[in-house]
Length: 65
Image (cartoon, rainbow, N blue to C red):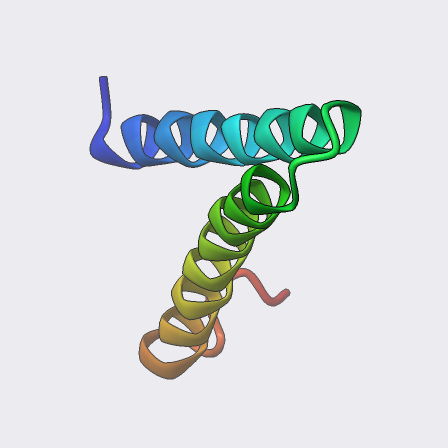
């Protein structure tokens, strides 16, 4: 398995885990669990943004026609 595929799977897992915690927190009215889930989801989004930023920095014309 390629490292990028592995990272993508890990990111998807953490995103789903965060969303599940968030929903569980809403269901049981636990603001701490809800915040924990939200933080996990945001962590994944920051990682994606950082990766995109690095891509633009090192290969700005990659993928353009």
